[in-house]
Length: 616
Ligand code: OXD
Ligand code: MN
Figure (cartoon, rainbow, N blue to C red):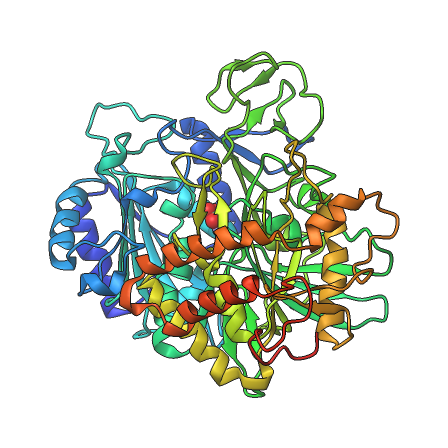
């Protein structure tokens, strides 16, 4: 018996079951027993490997099919009624035709499998911003992961009541098991051209077919909490962003809540759990990937983490880069595509300097340091509940969220972009966010290390026209007025001519956060320049760091020639957004060009800088 009398939900599940022909239906309650049964079932079927109970209690390793290792932007569609509304940065398809195509590919897709019905809430159940989704899937890996990543199970179904609104999220691996056929350890559709990750923002609803991996399959995350939510947020007057949320406390015990938007695999998890190198400072984590931002009754901007867990990039995560993440994943974690050690534990590049002997790589092959490919896939992940994090903030699942005093943007930029730059105003901050560029990473299928514009780190996640999205940010600034958080741009990834990083990063990033708090508090620590407000000489606390002088100059100075090239690249990018680009952004690029042409772009600007610097 289904555990609900919600008529629309029952009708939808019935319709999907008739279409997909599963051999059984299981309504997930989110209990511990259910999680144990799901993982034990996968271990006996060979979909999961149980890790050594003493070394990594309650933890598992999944190895995906080699074709199913990352998000698939090429096969991600925004099917709004009008093609125009999806904009030039999204793939669009006609919603009526796409639904017909999808009904065709889903027909019989779950034969021989169990259909799981997963009720979940994005944001804590009962929060003013919470949205309830129901995911249907034939993947027990997805069902188990959704329990770690979302507020999943019976309470979400109860919150829905008998007629509440929900977002239908339909998922299948696309690998039916007709009688007599053998299952594989990672069923999926191996031809990327036959996978679909489809959003219908006007319904709203989501259909995903053929991939069992991460954001393609855990539909609460990128599909609901970013692509669908960004469109709802625009319509309803809030913001759904690709941002971490952190709580910083100074030695004087002042509290600051910050959000930061960096493209995928650019260190959001590391910053969210930072262990400060400066004494007296603490960081507590509220989220590492997504923030839902709304204006509270007091006019300030509040952030809620819609997720309940972390789906973090494993390679590079180490006791040095992120000690809190290492403790978080000490137990009760599902690892995907990492290497297996001879004693039943996990390993990935960067975890230790020397790889242990006897490794098995992510594809199940013996691996040694001479092997031609990495032991862990570069986009290997850990999936773990937020509650396991030793530095989780006590307010991380607060219904109202936390008041934000600064928003950071950033990307991987080996040249030009300084370590930190404060926007003159909210409007100028929107310009900085809009012009975010970053080298591509292995979080998505495709070439890595290529500079691409990734406005607000939302390029793969904005569920409507990017030009309208930028307009929405400008409007939110007008509504926030004097309560608007300060906006900063950071770049931990600046390199010298030999390709070496100039900034030590990780725990030392607190030095930049410290300067940011001084800006928030109105201390005069910044100098107005052509590009924004840069740390005044001596204002950035680099005590105890042995930074070469030219590193300091490159990190906090202006590469005028580089910026002039940047202005042209920005103009080229803005042109791709066509006539929906807010004109104010185009004029800000032109004003930047003029400021760079002025006699001294490195010092205070005579009349060039946009107003409203607000206490540099
Ligand atoms: C993620 C991503 O998984 O951005 O968070 O790709
Ligand atoms: Mn992300």
